[in-house]
Image (cartoon, rainbow, N blue to C red):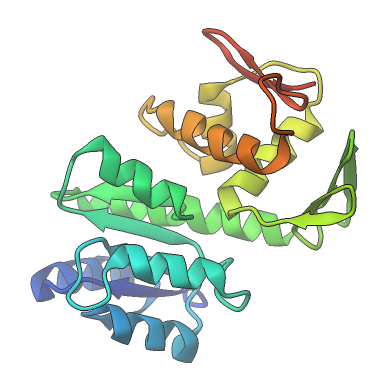
Length: 231
Protein backbone atom coordinates (compact mmCIF):
# COMPACT_ATOMS: atom_id res chain seq x y z
CA UNK A 1 0.00 0.00 0.00
CA UNK A 2 2.48 2.65 1.24
CA UNK A 3 5.54 0.37 1.32
CA UNK A 4 7.37 2.38 -1.29
CA UNK A 5 7.07 5.55 0.79
CA UNK A 6 10.03 6.21 3.07
CA UNK A 7 9.74 8.69 5.94
CA UNK A 8 12.61 10.16 7.95
CA UNK A 9 11.59 10.93 11.55
CA UNK A 10 13.86 13.39 13.39
CA UNK A 11 13.47 14.14 17.11
CA UNK A 12 15.88 14.15 20.05
CA UNK A 13 13.27 12.47 22.29
CA UNK A 14 13.60 8.72 21.78
CA UNK A 15 10.10 7.88 22.98
CA UNK A 16 8.58 10.35 20.47
CA UNK A 17 10.61 8.80 17.64
CA UNK A 18 9.54 5.29 18.67
CA UNK A 19 5.88 6.31 18.92
CA UNK A 20 5.88 7.89 15.46
CA UNK A 21 7.94 5.07 13.94
CA UNK A 22 5.65 2.37 15.33
CA UNK A 23 2.48 4.01 14.03
CA UNK A 24 3.88 4.92 10.62
CA UNK A 25 5.13 1.36 10.11
CA UNK A 26 1.73 0.06 11.22
CA UNK A 27 0.26 2.15 8.38
CA UNK A 28 2.62 0.62 5.82
CA UNK A 29 5.42 3.20 5.62
CA UNK A 30 9.14 2.52 5.73
CA UNK A 31 10.72 4.59 8.51
CA UNK A 32 14.28 5.76 9.14
CA UNK A 33 15.22 7.85 12.16
CA UNK A 34 17.65 10.51 13.37
CA UNK A 35 18.08 12.23 16.73
CA UNK A 36 20.01 15.40 15.86
CA UNK A 37 20.32 17.89 13.02
CA UNK A 38 23.60 16.82 11.45
CA UNK A 39 22.54 13.18 11.49
CA UNK A 40 19.23 14.19 9.89
CA UNK A 41 20.95 15.97 6.99
CA UNK A 42 23.20 12.95 6.41
CA UNK A 43 20.17 10.63 6.40
CA UNK A 44 18.34 12.87 3.91
CA UNK A 45 21.13 12.33 1.35
CA UNK A 46 21.75 8.67 2.21
CA UNK A 47 18.13 7.51 2.40
CA UNK A 48 16.39 9.92 -0.01
CA UNK A 49 13.12 9.92 1.97
CA UNK A 50 9.75 10.83 0.47
CA UNK A 51 8.95 12.98 3.50
CA UNK A 52 10.67 14.27 6.66
CA UNK A 53 8.96 14.65 10.04
CA UNK A 54 11.28 17.18 11.68
CA UNK A 55 11.37 18.43 15.28
CA UNK A 56 12.01 22.17 15.65
CA UNK A 57 14.19 21.92 18.75
CA UNK A 58 17.23 19.70 18.11
CA UNK A 59 20.72 19.65 19.65
CA UNK A 60 23.46 21.14 17.48
CA UNK A 61 21.86 22.07 14.17
CA UNK A 62 18.21 22.81 14.99
CA UNK A 63 15.18 21.92 12.91
CA UNK A 64 14.88 25.40 11.41
CA UNK A 65 18.44 25.22 10.07
CA UNK A 66 17.91 21.67 8.76
CA UNK A 67 14.82 22.89 6.89
CA UNK A 68 16.67 25.91 5.49
CA UNK A 69 19.55 23.78 4.22
CA UNK A 70 17.20 21.27 2.60
CA UNK A 71 15.27 24.01 0.82
CA UNK A 72 18.48 25.66 -0.44
CA UNK A 73 19.74 22.46 -2.09
CA UNK A 74 18.22 21.50 -5.46
CA UNK A 75 18.65 17.81 -4.55
CA UNK A 76 16.48 18.06 -1.43
CA UNK A 77 14.34 21.17 -1.93
CA UNK A 78 11.25 19.24 -3.05
CA UNK A 79 11.23 16.74 -0.19
CA UNK A 80 8.17 17.71 1.88
CA UNK A 81 8.69 18.54 5.56
CA UNK A 82 6.26 18.34 8.47
CA UNK A 83 7.65 20.25 11.45
CA UNK A 84 7.10 19.17 15.04
CA UNK A 85 7.24 21.75 17.80
CA UNK A 86 6.57 21.70 21.52
CA UNK A 87 5.80 25.41 21.32
CA UNK A 88 2.28 26.57 20.55
CA UNK A 89 3.13 30.21 19.81
CA UNK A 90 1.98 31.35 16.39
CA UNK A 91 5.39 32.83 15.59
CA UNK A 92 7.03 29.40 15.67
CA UNK A 93 4.41 27.93 13.36
CA UNK A 94 4.69 30.86 10.95
CA UNK A 95 8.51 30.68 10.98
CA UNK A 96 8.43 27.03 9.94
CA UNK A 97 6.06 27.80 7.08
CA UNK A 98 8.04 30.83 5.96
CA UNK A 99 11.25 28.83 5.50
CA UNK A 100 9.52 26.20 3.37
CA UNK A 101 8.00 23.58 5.68
CA UNK A 102 4.87 22.05 4.17
CA UNK A 103 3.03 21.61 7.43
CA UNK A 104 3.49 21.71 11.20
CA UNK A 105 2.03 19.85 14.15
CA UNK A 106 2.27 20.93 17.78
CA UNK A 107 3.14 18.57 20.62
CA UNK A 108 1.33 16.91 22.22
CA UNK A 109 -0.35 15.55 19.08
CA UNK A 110 -2.69 12.67 18.37
CA UNK A 111 -1.27 9.83 16.31
CA UNK A 112 -4.38 9.88 14.14
CA UNK A 113 -3.83 13.55 13.27
CA UNK A 114 -0.15 12.96 12.45
CA UNK A 115 -0.97 10.05 10.13
CA UNK A 116 -3.68 12.12 8.40
CA UNK A 117 -1.22 14.95 7.78
CA UNK A 118 1.49 12.60 6.53
CA UNK A 119 -0.97 11.08 4.03
CA UNK A 120 -2.15 14.53 2.91
CA UNK A 121 1.35 15.92 2.35
CA UNK A 122 2.44 12.79 0.46
CA UNK A 123 -0.71 12.93 -1.65
CA UNK A 124 -0.02 16.54 -2.61
CA UNK A 125 3.58 15.64 -3.45
CA UNK A 126 2.43 12.75 -5.63
CA UNK A 127 -0.17 14.86 -7.42
CA UNK A 128 2.42 17.51 -8.18
CA UNK A 129 4.73 14.95 -9.77
CA UNK A 130 1.88 13.65 -11.93
CA UNK A 131 1.05 17.03 -13.44
CA UNK A 132 1.07 17.06 -17.22
CA UNK A 133 3.38 19.41 -19.07
CA UNK A 134 1.78 22.80 -19.02
CA UNK A 135 2.82 26.42 -19.31
CA UNK A 136 0.71 29.15 -17.74
CA UNK A 137 1.40 32.80 -18.54
CA UNK A 138 0.05 35.72 -16.51
CA UNK A 139 1.41 39.09 -17.56
CA UNK A 140 5.21 38.93 -17.33
CA UNK A 141 5.09 35.70 -15.29
CA UNK A 142 5.55 32.24 -16.80
CA UNK A 143 4.70 29.12 -14.78
CA UNK A 144 6.14 25.84 -16.07
CA UNK A 145 4.22 23.15 -14.18
CA UNK A 146 6.23 20.21 -15.47
CA UNK A 147 9.59 21.77 -14.59
CA UNK A 148 8.15 23.33 -11.43
CA UNK A 149 9.70 26.66 -12.41
CA UNK A 150 8.48 30.24 -12.35
CA UNK A 151 10.08 33.14 -14.19
CA UNK A 152 9.34 36.84 -14.61
CA UNK A 153 10.58 38.61 -17.73
CA UNK A 154 12.79 35.58 -18.35
CA UNK A 155 14.38 35.66 -14.88
CA UNK A 156 13.83 32.63 -12.66
CA UNK A 157 12.02 33.19 -9.35
CA UNK A 158 12.76 30.82 -6.47
CA UNK A 159 9.57 29.73 -4.74
CA UNK A 160 8.89 27.25 -1.96
CA UNK A 161 6.65 24.29 -2.79
CA UNK A 162 3.60 25.88 -1.20
CA UNK A 163 4.24 29.27 -2.83
CA UNK A 164 4.42 27.51 -6.19
CA UNK A 165 1.18 25.59 -5.53
CA UNK A 166 -0.63 28.77 -4.50
CA UNK A 167 0.58 30.68 -7.55
CA UNK A 168 -0.37 27.79 -9.82
CA UNK A 169 -3.92 27.42 -8.51
CA UNK A 170 -4.50 31.19 -8.61
CA UNK A 171 -3.21 31.33 -12.19
CA UNK A 172 -5.33 28.33 -13.23
CA UNK A 173 -8.37 30.19 -11.87
CA UNK A 174 -7.40 33.65 -13.17
CA UNK A 175 -10.16 36.18 -12.51
CA UNK A 176 -11.96 33.96 -9.99
CA UNK A 177 -12.09 34.82 -6.30
CA UNK A 178 -10.72 31.90 -4.28
CA UNK A 179 -11.51 31.82 -0.57
CA UNK A 180 -8.80 31.20 2.00
CA UNK A 181 -10.48 27.94 3.03
CA UNK A 182 -10.62 26.80 -0.60
CA UNK A 183 -6.90 27.50 -0.98
CA UNK A 184 -6.16 25.68 2.27
CA UNK A 185 -8.08 22.64 1.10
CA UNK A 186 -6.61 22.57 -2.41
CA UNK A 187 -2.99 23.38 -1.57
CA UNK A 188 -2.67 21.57 1.76
CA UNK A 189 -5.02 18.76 0.75
CA UNK A 190 -7.20 18.71 3.88
CA UNK A 191 -9.06 20.92 6.29
CA UNK A 192 -6.42 23.03 7.99
CA UNK A 193 -8.64 23.74 10.99
CA UNK A 194 -9.59 27.17 9.70
CA UNK A 195 -6.10 28.61 10.27
CA UNK A 196 -6.39 30.97 7.33
CA UNK A 197 -3.31 32.94 8.45
CA UNK A 198 -1.33 30.15 6.81
CA UNK A 199 -2.58 31.33 3.41
CA UNK A 200 -1.95 35.00 4.25
CA UNK A 201 1.67 34.27 5.25
CA UNK A 202 2.36 32.44 1.99
CA UNK A 203 0.61 35.06 -0.13
CA UNK A 204 2.68 37.80 1.53
CA UNK A 205 5.93 36.05 0.70
CA UNK A 206 4.74 35.16 -2.79
CA UNK A 207 3.95 38.82 -3.46
CA UNK A 208 7.44 39.88 -2.36
CA UNK A 209 8.87 37.60 -5.02
CA UNK A 210 6.56 38.27 -7.97
CA UNK A 211 5.13 41.76 -7.53
CA UNK A 212 6.81 45.01 -8.53
CA UNK A 213 8.07 47.21 -5.72
CA UNK A 214 5.12 49.56 -5.33
CA UNK A 215 1.94 49.82 -3.31
CA UNK A 216 -0.32 48.39 -6.02
CA UNK A 217 -0.44 44.64 -6.54
CA UNK A 218 -0.39 43.80 -10.22
CA UNK A 219 -0.96 40.06 -9.98
CA UNK A 220 -2.64 38.93 -6.75
CA UNK A 221 -5.58 40.95 -5.47
CA UNK A 222 -6.93 40.68 -1.92
CA UNK A 223 -10.71 40.40 -1.75
CA UNK A 224 -11.46 41.69 1.74
CA UNK A 225 -13.20 39.17 3.96
CA UNK A 226 -13.10 36.45 1.30
CA UNK A 227 -9.73 35.56 -0.15
CA UNK A 228 -7.59 36.26 -3.22
CA UNK A 229 -7.72 36.28 -7.00
CA UNK A 230 -5.21 36.47 -9.82
CA UNK A 231 -5.91 39.59 -11.89
